[in-house]
Image (cartoon, rainbow, N blue to C red):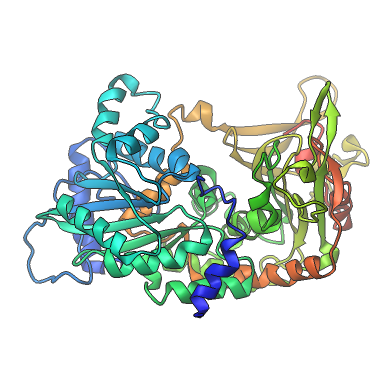
Length: 571
């Protein structure tokens, strides 16, 4: 058995109840400049300028997309019509139906897809083109501010959607897909994007079959790969080795949808374009940083999939750690993807090894509230009896470099908690020799400024400041300087998958994870995960709908920190 076949076997059980289941090279500088010129010109004619996540103009709806690849001769300057074929592998699964197809339609609705494009669904399930269209039409929605032409746009999009049934490990079936793609691409420069909305145990089978039998003969070919990217350092490295047998690193787009969220994207803008923040972004002024993720629901019948990974692998090792790296990185040389990812890798490699003493794990138990009963995690019929898989984890992490030495980065993630939120909280140091400390009494935390970035829901940025209450007495109060996105930007915020799909079509890697980033992230968490599993550490139980295990509060107190999301004002 080959190493890559062994990888697939190792993950076949882990992904049997995966939510995915239901029952490429970048342009040269010359090519990018040409594309930018044509894309910007066409966009300006339409009254707006589309930009990729690094600020460069996008090709968007250009009728003459000057997309060149390393396979295409660069001698002629004549205009060449191009087309993009997007194949969603695992098209009948929940992720494809609920996220990927709606995101593609949203891009089409807002005129962000190229003029010539085709969408194919690929899965083992037998479907006709019409049955696929009927299935995905149930999840398509239109922008609330332009809904008057919704029906027409939806019909136009659905007419570009087609289906091919086939086995995931069959080169013959992918050859049949290739034949159908060529029919749609006839007379144009073909570019192909494959979205792998499938369990991890068949990643390599699909990449092998599609790369050999359905790659673009002259344009680019790219693959978007969904997490999980392994379970530890060894399995992640094995997956990377297997993928790179058939693809170059530039063809692989490892997606973490949290990196496409509006407030996460805004992190670098907030820091690097506002003079008021950049000088404060260090151990000299910041006391601690908190990255908090909570869901107010449990596994809801998906415990079998979740139990093979747990909250640390599912949320902390990817979503929260990626946000931490973006937050803490040094100023990159430019907005180019490689410059940004280089700085993120430096942060990850500077992080201190996680110690078990700096981690708290929990698992939710059954609870009755308001006459309603909520089940325990182990009550889920898909979860093995006596499972020790954590549904909650809190950890204290440290970056051993000059900027962040000694500053605790506290992570907290959990299911079945009292609220749903994802946020970044930056607590600044106390004002030295504060003239008004008597007014605040012994609770010095009330005198501390705090920057809060609400990633979801109710996107917002606010800064907590101290302020005098109007009146004749000297009474101080904490107030918020607010930027509420719903008030300042009433237009609907695009879904993260829209941004990431658009960037993959554009060949922009900035919001995708490079292999050495992945290696550094797993190197940080793998020893901890192995220790938890080898020692069979029992998670602390917490009631469904509560604020989590008490141990998380002791962990924060160990570093003289109070969790910001538990403040009395609820913000």
